[in-house]
Amino acid sequence: MAATEKVIDPIHQFQIVPLSGKISILGQDYSFTNASLYMVIVVGIACLLMLYGTRKRAVVPGRLQAAMELFYEFTVDTVVSTTGKDGLRFLPLVFSLFIFVTISNYMGLIPGAFTVTSHIIVTFAFAMLVILTVIIYGMIRHGAHFFGLFVPSGVPKILLPFISLIEIVSFMSRPVSLSMRLFANMLAGHIALKVFAGFIIMLTAAGGWAVLAPLPLLAMVAINALELLVCGLQAFVFAILTCIYLNDALHPGH
Amino acid sequence: MSAGFRVVSEFVAGVIVGALLGWQLDKWLGTAPFALIGMLILGTASGFWNVYRLAARPSSPQQDDGR
Image (cartoon, rainbow over all chains, first blue to last red):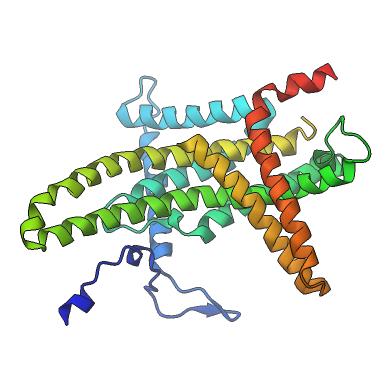
């Protein structure tokens, strides 16, 4: 009956739907999906905000320009304080990642919108980009000395191979933890929102129990506020961890 | 909450990477469960190491200088 069609499904929001016909290049599926659409929208918003905000280049900035300058200077401060002055060559990378993650996190809070960062493949691609940058730049800049990262100083000779192995595994776990943190936060937050929204509908439909329906509504308000915090915070954590890992490429061995 | 979540994800990532490495090594070398067991132990150790480094970061540079 109708109940089977209108079942509340908190996972449904993460479904990827192709919007165009199937486009396959070399056997891979490159169809334009709703995820791609939202990525384009996020990039568009980022570009528009930046270009429109800095359009006048006023000495006394307007409201939008001040916000954009604040965002930019905040990123610069983060990069300089974690990697030092020579880390500024990575500023474009860190800034792009930061603004993309921030805007796509906040986009996801708009009801009905798709959250790009709630898919682990997206966050994992970002994390791999960061780690590959670290490895390649570290190899070019420091050569074999870069592998000193895996040989901590002041360790007894007998323990050294074991510690090095642990260091290598710990280095390999970095992209996993970096991507998993952002993905899990977004996924959990959005599922919680949907589940509580489902409670409201179920309670309103449950006869006398409908008097309890405002309770999950209040919880929804609280969770939404928390999500606003988590979105900004996780984007910031992603950016600062990127800086910390880049610091290893710039200055291996502390 | 953010700090706690960070510690958890660092630890879990260590274990997951260890397990994946062991699983794939087993597949590649054909040594039934031994690589998985060994790499799982290593992965857990590196998870603890991640957490330890997270906790010890602010003071670690000075300790290195004192040596």
